[in-house]
Amino acid sequence: MIYLSAEKTIYISNGGIIMMGYLIFLVMFIFFYVVFKLILDNKKFIGKSYDERQLQIRANAYKYSFFTVIFLLVLFGGMYGFAPGAINKIASHDMVLFTIMYAGVTVFSVYSVVKDAFFSIDNKKSNNGYLILITIVLIINAVCLITHIIDGTLIGVNGISFTEGGACILNVFTFGSIIITIIIKSLCNKKEMAD
Image (tube, rainbow, N blue to C red; front, side, top):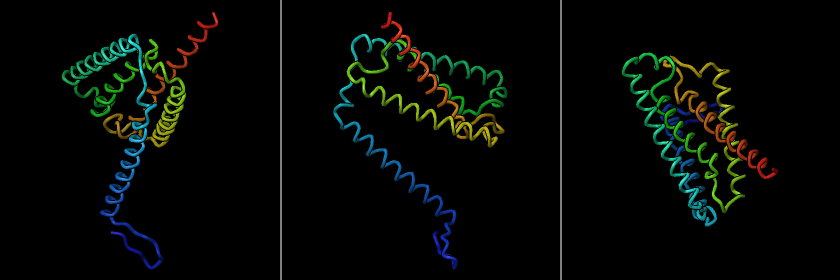
């Protein structure tokens, strides 16, 4: 409930705060839906094409990513079975599961970049835009991570939680790995062209 006090200050009760959160979520959802719809309707974004070699490499990258996720699930499942308290001191359950998923994404991305199958062959200008986008995401998450470290909220009672800074760690690691791999690959390509 929102009401106005004598000092002309607006107060929101707990129900109003929850309602405000739903409203903000709804506005953000509509905004991102419209943005993604506009991007997908634009023909130049849909027209990305990969040659047969790139498609085969991407299939291999998906395969390696899948086996990485399966291996880590079995590994952490076994660790939980034999020593359940050991992992709980380091990371929460949600952090472990998201770490496994991010590891799969990182394996796919790094393998694709190394084998020149990450970007499409016909859209070189969007590659720079993609690099700028992941750099911005990396910087935002690095600032978030530093804030959690300074506040002392990174490590809680159950170790690192995905919702309390763990997401920042995973995003910094994943996008940092992708950016570093892209930079190293482009430097190697320039060196090969010079020779």
